[in-house]
Image (cartoon, rainbow, N blue to C red; front, top):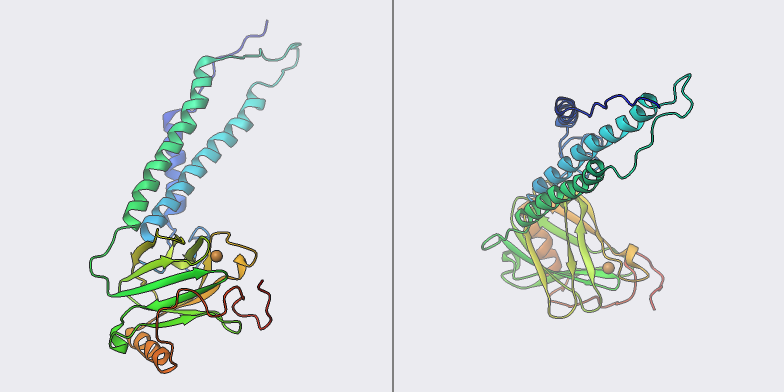
Length: 286
Ligand SMILES: [Cu+2]
């Protein structure tokens, strides 16, 4: 019989050391860093809702790294430690139905998922916090396959609601004033879409019918970003793009006045050229 020597499990000290190394490795990371690596593949953060999402993402990376190191170390350790040695015929003894190990296999993933779940719910409730009396209200209409943005009663136009929407030549533009809170009211005349601006670390579904979604957010970095539809809504889903311009308040007001002068006054619930694709001169709709 082959003597199986006593196993040494990965000690608490070692686990703490791995955890500390992961934290040190990731502590140089920031959602505002120029380097994509240090942002852990996220875009540069651009809203007041970015922080909870960033912490969730960072925590997930630390957990993933720790799990990776422990599993990889065990994979390397097992065949070296328990290989068949010279003079041994049968090799190491085979074990099955080891209850403590089976329990460990079951409980560890459940614990990891529970911790993820807890932090996800926490981040979600922070991100969905409403702002009382937001500075601006914009109605976002997602439709096959374009976006319409209705600026509800803005000061710049003396309360006249103005809009912008995509046509076959242009992607629609969404203007937002920097560091001012905006309530987005999301609605759709046809199917479910999803309003997503990656830089804001935020997206929300746009439902047809009576279930209108809304959220408040404050963009805090000037720039031009690309917004997308993040819900597979039909054949030209991938063409549902829009330009987001986060600008100074003066530029924002000037843009709304331009819309008013261009006669884009009203609150359309879908594009005039429905089922056509923004930014393409040909008619590929159905
Ligand atoms: Cu869509």
